[in-house]
Image (cartoon, rainbow, N blue to C red; front, top):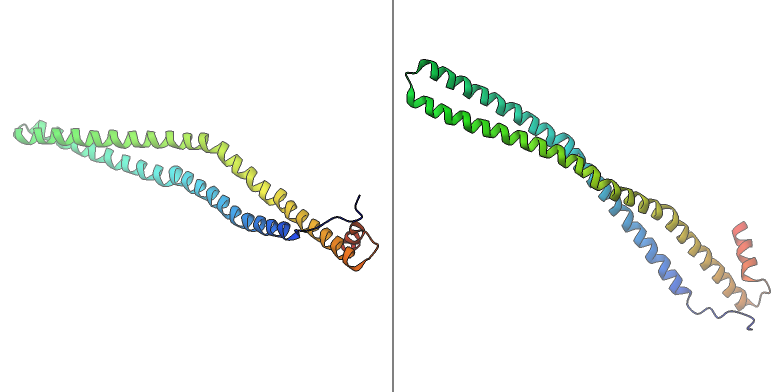
Length: 176
């Protein structure tokens, strides 16, 4: 066996470490943005859209009641036969508008449930990936730092002719 290892490319480890740090610095904000976008979507469905369609439904129901009242008044007076037909069409149109608003509100509630059901497993995976990047990959960078220090110490020990081993040098440096 050879007395010492042939260390030829510490730069490859340094390059990998630098690339890993760049990846981590880019991946974390992307995952945060995905989580934030999901929260914004949920809030938009649960708050903004629901409030809009509930108000729109109330507004359309008011219009329907007004149209029904006008039709009733025209029917009672029976003098305005042409107007009664026009008012009947207005009632039908406003009834369709109310039905549309009810359908949209119902659809919105269904989307809200589906969004939660479909996004929960994906959000869990994103959270796990965030945890992996924050802990395991941070440890990987620290391990690469330690390996680079050990290799550097080993290489320096071999160049200076020092009899200490690279491990002993690294342990001494870490205690400092």
